[in-house]
Length: 184
Image 1 (tube, rainbow, N blue to C red):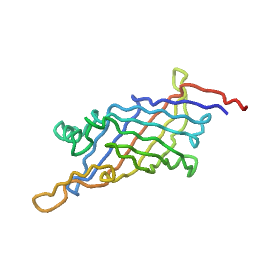
Image 2: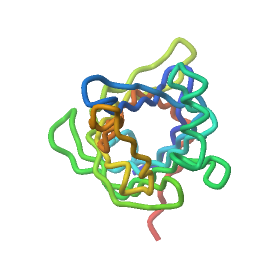
Image 3: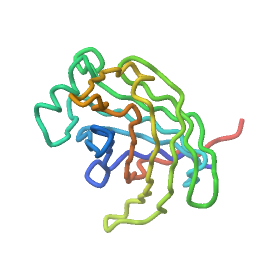
Image 4: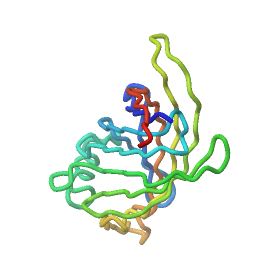
């Protein structure tokens, strides 16, 4: 078997999140600067380990005032914790396309085990001879588990911000290197 290393193609990848606002609608956002690497045996996604980092300073909800608040101490505290980090531990294959990703998410200096859902999009050759794979990722976390406890009540007594955050990512990786495993 050969070990293959893959790097994310940022041009063809995106990381989004959404959270309830006033419990009647959603606020969505994204990170524009992120990096990820995966290592797996051959092109077998079930053997992959992944490390992803996202720069908190690149957060965008299309509202600069809200983005500045999200970078501040009430939320991500970007000055003290400039990156969000996810490191996978194992992939649990459900069927040929679907799997669960078990790993550790670190945000605001707090690390928690989470499980994300993954969907394998397949393998393809691009016009320049590069091998690419596509992976969709989704899941939910409770922001308070990571120390993001900002809360505010509206004038009518309703909660302004939900605790559950949905994570959605569409990613494309490019094979970088292959190293043959040599049995001793």
